Amino acid sequence: MDSARTARQRTLSDVRTERTLESEYDMPELNLFVGGMSCRRCVREVTARLRDVPGVETVSANPGDRRVTMSGSMQLADVLAAFTGTTYRPQLADTTGDERDGTAPGESVP
Image (cartoon, rainbow, N blue to C red; front, side, top):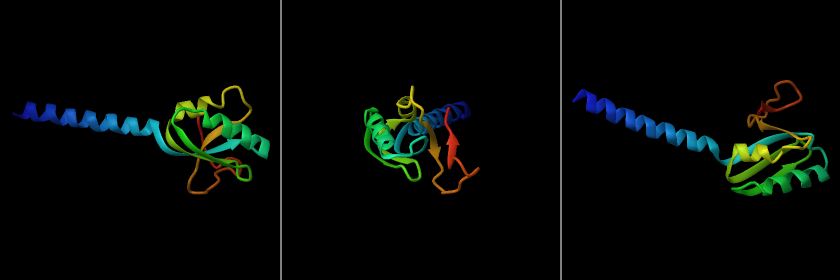
């Protein structure tokens, strides 16, 4: 009886883990700090690239604070791949508004 309960608990745990992993990859909203995006031309280029990412529904960018907000069902890897071959340096934005070192308000993303 105990082995059946343990197996059932493992199964429930596996399902929870799978759901957690899925939710980490499908991002309903994503905020990025984009180093190098400082003018209107840069905003047009960055938003055009991000609109082509599968699952992106909306994109808004502000060159003043170099932040981009996206919504949809996009995956982080696809969003980062949109910057391949550019001089832009995307980072996950820190939503608390704290700037850790005065230059980048977020964590670096590989």
